[in-house]
Image 1 (cartoon, rainbow, N blue to C red):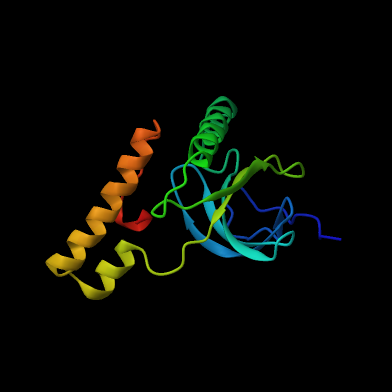
Image 2 (cartoon, rainbow, N blue to C red):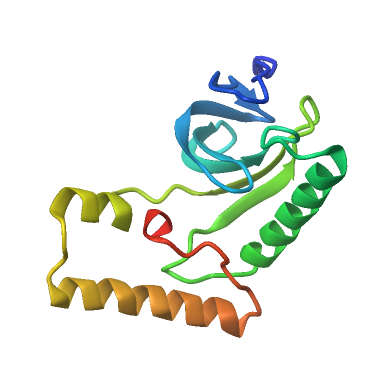
Length: 158
């Protein structure tokens, strides 16, 4: 039986143990709508990225928190329709019944982000840069053809 979720504070530097059935392994990052954890899906035995909205953790009112949660669920439904090699696959989206946190379970993309690569290497040579930009453009074009707008395209998300 899975352990009950360990509460995390709203300011929360403390990692939860579980979110719904997913075992939390570490934090990957924080964004405008929530946090992203590296997690284990015990049902299929794979590591995933778990994007979570924690109501009130970003200083919003209860009404604003509900708007954030609704926007997050719309994002999950839109992204769940996409199947492209340049876009992380969505596996699951729901709300943790123990905490009320909305979550999105998605493909864990391994390797450095473009931000990390640029920090480590400095400027990229033109051919690899053009290759990266072409792949990003193809993925965004595919998403736009399916009426999905990313809204947070930046080196940390590439």
